[in-house]
Image (cartoon, rainbow, N blue to C red; front, side, top):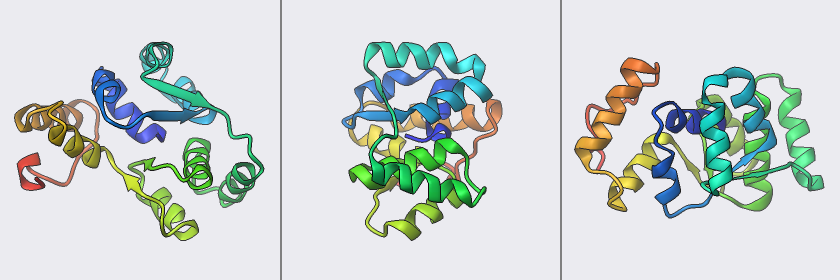
Length: 161
């Protein structure tokens, strides 16, 4: 999970949705550091999610991960969180949760088979898994738009179900 998606759930204090989702969510040390460095107000929620097992934190350690991370970092276009999340997902054949379009494009250039989920995709999955109603999902969408400058390109989740 990249910082972009993680922050969306941390800022509205809904890590309970991540905890109940059918996927296990992993963050890299770099993603955790970005939360600390750029979103310090969310650090307590991140720490709680890690302690409860809602999230698992891992390091980029495998040679392939380190090489991919290095090559992505060299361009200077992506942050370390994005680079590490992409490297981990590609190397370990995980699903990548990320919202940044430029990072998504870079990831797809490296691995055409990489499965990518956005915040919107995760919310749709949460509706399908009966973790949220459409009305609740639409309220989250509005909260993100009005309080956190994150906008989804839909009027309602009913439009994409």
